[in-house]
Image (spheres, rainbow, N blue to C red):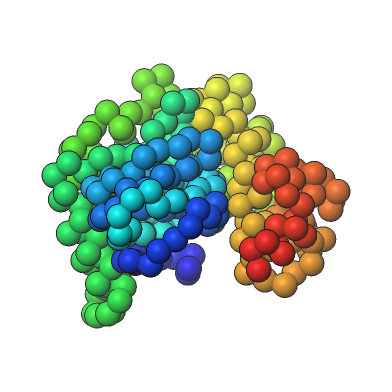
Length: 265
């Protein structure tokens, strides 16, 4: 997927349970069939009209339970999301993972299905201004999600969203570099201790965890899409040495980089 856009697809293909990962945010909208969806350690039952919101840092998988499985899948890069959706509350659905977060949003009115259909058609048959149309449809989709259930979009009462979002953007742009809390705090105009607390409240991760998971996400992408050797990938992702990279990668994924590459190749 190009780093500056998204894609939306409709599919009726059958599937078996397959845990996988994309270095991109994802929306899964179920049109028909009953499925089991796992996102990280959370497991859900999915049925027609259910929308699942998966962040770019979350491994996930889907298994068919009953019926013909028809669905829309939308993937969007962090860069595309940042430019297309300015409102912090709407964007929080992808960026925040507080304790107890629920990835499933029931669409009882089935209003969202038509928007997914139009976005998929713009991808299938590109026309003049398709990019603008996709962006507008996506924003409309997020507004409808909010209107159906505003409680799914809470902003922490004690956390200033703007500075924390800015720190999150800064990490997204520089996570392959050496980053310190002092540097992040200066960029967000907050004290290091307050930023650490506010960042965890906003994202569900400490800044250190978020940096590490961003590096692992890029490593997974490079292992599956390039032939760079493991040492090269370690350097490109910001790890100081190969042994640290292998240790952290195995801790987060349960597999060594080499085994991960072979299993996804």
